[in-house]
Image 1: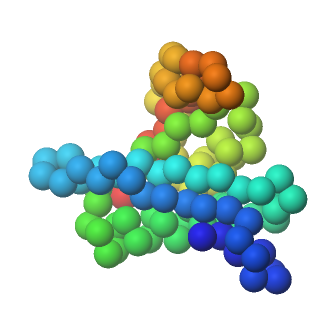
Image 2 (image 1 turned 60 degrees about the horizontal axis):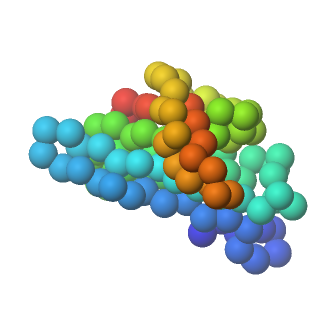
Length: 108
C-alpha cells in the first residue's frame, strides 16, 4: 500500500508472477490516485520494491508495462533504473480496449 502523509491509502504496488528456477523474475504493477501524483510517492515505492525483490526474495530481474502514453509512469520506472525494451501490442484490456504497452525491465 502507498499511504499519504495523513495515512490514507492512495495507491498500491504489487510484485506478482514470481518465477523461480533459471528465471528469478517478477512483474511490478502499481497505481496511484491522481490526487497523490507528482509527490514522488510511487517512485519511492518502486525503489523499496526493488530492494525487497533483490535483498529478500533473491530475484534477478523485474519487469513492468505501461500504457504507451503514460509518461508519468514511465518516468517512475526510469528513475528507478528500468530500461524500455519494446512494445507489446494489444497487451492488456483497459477501458474495454486492447491497448499497447511499453515494456520495461531492470536487472537487479
